[in-house]
Image 1 (cartoon, rainbow, N blue to C red):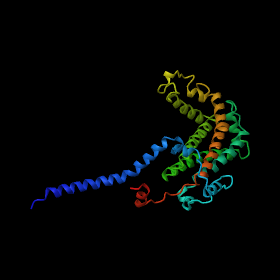
Image 2 (image 1 turned 180 degrees about the vertical axis):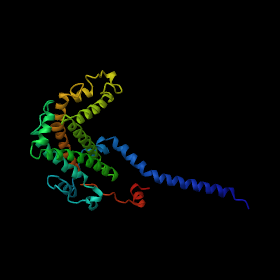
Image 3 (image 1 turned 90 degrees about the horizontal axis):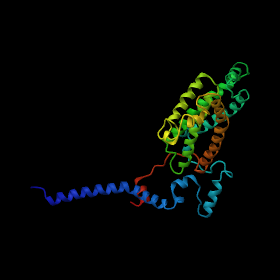
Image 4 (image 1 turned 135 degrees about the vertical axis):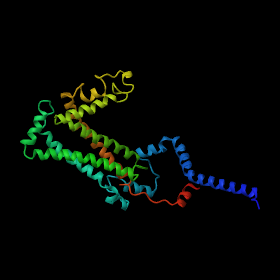
Length: 303
């Protein structure tokens, strides 16, 4: 007996309806989130970008007043409550704390190295030789500074990798993630500027190659896109500004010394303070994401 065409049509409609329901259930949370973002965009203070950068007021209730006291950094240096899993070494790797201690070692050893160093073209390399061969424990001091710098580059990259893999850059930590990216760039610049200070062939050619790439910087380099149109030449572009001239000479050495010993450490220290403060204000170290059941998702978004 041939199949009833009406029943076949009903089956097809039923399958199509079930597919539509599944698609709706899958994208409905995103639609609701989009509606919320659209409403929040009408008032910039309600956007996630604003909330991630600036702290927002809470309702004036006994509970929020107690939370304001417990989350105050000056009244409670350590958080009153943390996720137990967030302090496990196999989750955090401890790279953030290790990076800070390495920066502390670099600061102390760098101050001692400054006692024996003159940032001049004729004296810099001679000071390094004097430090290595004549100053008691001078070689140890310089090697501690150098290896701590190498280790800090590694630990900062591992810290950023851990934060990315564990999703610790998500709400409400977007702003602190941005601060971390800036700190990563400053760490690389510290290493780059320190490379030239011994004034040897290795540092000379490393800085020569590195700053030569700056000539191709968009808008700011005379060999980069739109650079010539904006009037950039070899004597006024970003490479000229970095070196204080067109070649790596005494001006470049002095600028590298100022950036390495004064400017970048001050900026990095200020951003470190903001970074640690936001770690504390955002609920301490982020822990593993909780498991959310499908029924809880449907209840939350009223699917």
